[in-house]
Length: 272
Image (cartoon, rainbow, N blue to C red; front, side):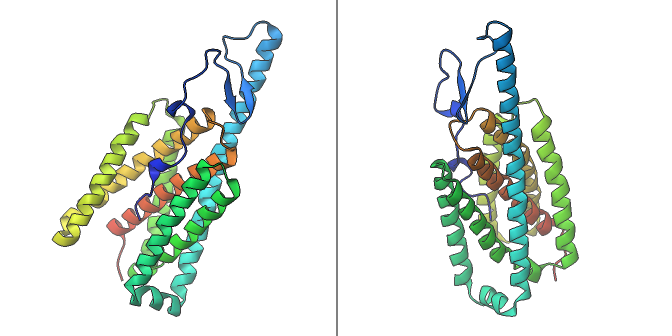
């Protein structure tokens, strides 16, 4: 359930193109003049109006990203709850490991397809695949209702919401560039996955606890990093639709939230 293809998504304009000599930055089909390239009161007013338009666009993209994320979480939660309430569905999921492997395979395929659709600026396909992923993820997450007490699931969810909200706020208001932390956090995440796989054979409960704590810290950092990255992508847009950037950001934030929730539940949840 770790993050899939995090770095396989959209790119910032600065990732593959140098700014033009006139510093004309084209964002969403609009051209904004640089602050040092205007002359006179009329040009100054035009620049200020352009900045306001760009700020509104960035705000709209950020709002859309969090809105789509919350919608996807609702879809996942409802799917997981309805699946857990069905004895036939739970029997199908728990009695045959092939079903789980099939669902995980579908998840990888859908994430890959969604990233490809976003790169091609296909809004409709990106949205459809994102919410298909939310449904499939709900099917796999339904087993937590079988493994953990409902009160523990509720507590873990609300705890995750508080932590996620605080870290997203940090990513939004901080003036420090978090780009360098992104690579460090990804290395830490890959390392924790490798150690988790090794621990399957070792079976150390102490090591498992340590992995959970470290992974929680990693996804807290990724939440702040992704929030800032979405804002940077909205500002330094390379020609993508605002809706596509919102959907890409929503998927990143969704993965942060789900993985943070699962680790908190694993660490503090009471099993049945």
